[in-house]
Length: 454
Image (tube, rainbow, N blue to C red; front, side, top):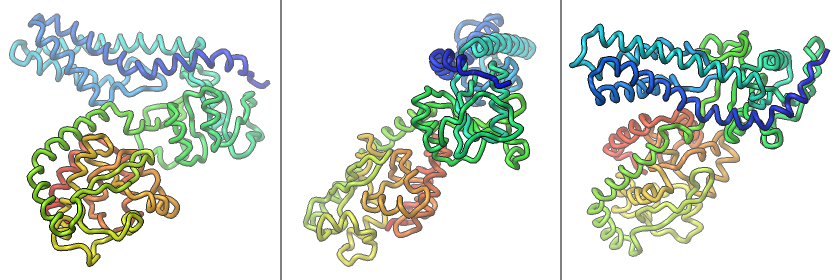
């Protein structure tokens, strides 16, 4: 007999959308709050005053955050990352009470904190499972209507505590396969229609259970969905990755959030402002001298603006020091390289070799048009050309353009491979971290000392 879920699907859609969004947004905060309160209570039993108690409570939250203890889970458990929680509690207690309590007292404090944190997590996990089971799951699309997708959907329907309610499949062909369970779930469309279907059905989660192109997954993520890759146990990748999520034994990999949704992303902007402001102040005398010599050599304003393509394809006007006088605006917009142009004088050539001509872009960073680190912005004429011919080139615009970047510190400057640049830039965006930005800026200083400009 077919399993009919149409009535449940309609009833759960509004509540599922609201509660799943609320849970996704508050899960890290709820877990952090539990840890904060548990450590504060456990540390207070040591009785050494408010400052060390507050230090221990804050430190345990910081350590657990660094250990990704607060990463969302499909089916939370009170014992998730129990070893790390115990270790962070012990370290926090040691730091806070290292001079005022014995080792035994510190160990007991950490044990009490761990016990309370596990109990609190267990209560929270029970409440979440109950909420999922009684009408608050997340409306879900399964991409792939083959045997793997059907078995996964069947298990999700039978076990609503996972909080993922399949609405239907997306597939290039129909979903009729002999021997598969009759679930009453339709094929709602093709994967290429995912943006429309997510909005039409108020979808909050997408599971990839078959062949799927990367743009489909990224479209779902950009529209606010949790995206999971449902692995078949016969796939080789299961032997190369750590599998923490599952649905009734079906391994799931959660798609990592876009870099802009990282909790550390605002620090990137703060770092940009600090470095750009300091750079403008320190290099002001250098820029003043450059302005005078450029005026003498070129006979025009030392600064010029050039239209480039920035984040999400938005146009930006990049400020540079003038190193030559172009014939006209069209030449400036379409001439690829002037490294060997006879019109570049000695001063202009020196500015380009030392990359001093890029210093005014610190003002672009301060304004927010650019970042210190990111893919180098290109002129619209070449963006159109490269987007048609270079795989992945358009994906570089997912992040703000930068003065320096991962490609530049690997020697990909001037007249070098555009395909290599796109690959390096996309690798940087996919694995972005604040530490990587700092590393790139440090290595950029070394590159400048080697006079690698063009």
